Image (cartoon, rainbow, N blue to C red):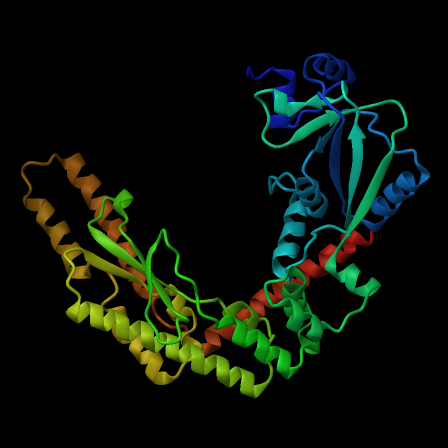
Length: 404
């Protein structure tokens, strides 16, 4: 399609169609049958939302200008829950809303959303799927007349819980921690989570991890809480194998204050301590006895992130293994740099290019070492405090926007 094509510009560049252009496109791409379609709308403020609900309840809503609908309810709901794309510098309020959603594990970033359902009659609307412009199941529709429609409201979790209070501990026990509302409760209502539910949450994070068939990975501990996966990063043009360690990430809820019961905290620390020791034993055994031609790089970032919760012995083991983790030693890189001076087969520019690459190797080497060091508990505490301050600041700003 040409850039000036009306439908292409509407779908890909989000340039609104005029009514004249819409009627022209309808002649070519009208719906071939009566089609159920949905439109998701989100509202930043309470006033915008209430005004629109009043319009819907009056029966006066109709798409007077060409509006985009979808044949997918899931797509419409995603638009009702938050704006899907934005440019930060053009709309920092939307960026703030998305930050709020990510920090609080909300299901909606705005005050509220609405999904409208209509039936677009055969021969009307512009079925984008019949063109080569479509990126989703989209239909553009406009009518000067009243239409039949129904709607449902997408409330934030906060609003849902105010309208329908629940026993949050029973809810988590019944629905598990992967449920979206359970996640919201864990990160926003910690003071109401009792010790029994805290233990349930903690235990859930240490359930055995599944092996992924398309990845070369294997369990390396008795309880199968820890998985190592390996791949050969040939796209980096390096003759090495990368090994990374995986376990369910309990750090975020731990640092958010979900766990306050001493018995639960001890359970978590003992489990994480065992994970660190298992990983270090695996690295040491592979380093001394592994029979591989390629160099191996062990990504210890996940292990190091939990180091501050482990015993002093486990932290020292991380330090010991740190020297076995990188595929190149500092001296090897330096020797390559020194050897450049004697290379008569290279021009000065070629030597400079190789030198720049080698300095990048040194930087990566040092970063790998630093990232593989366990952080001090005091350092982590300061980071948690900064994150909580950021979260509280964003929540205050969002509430001002929603109530404006």
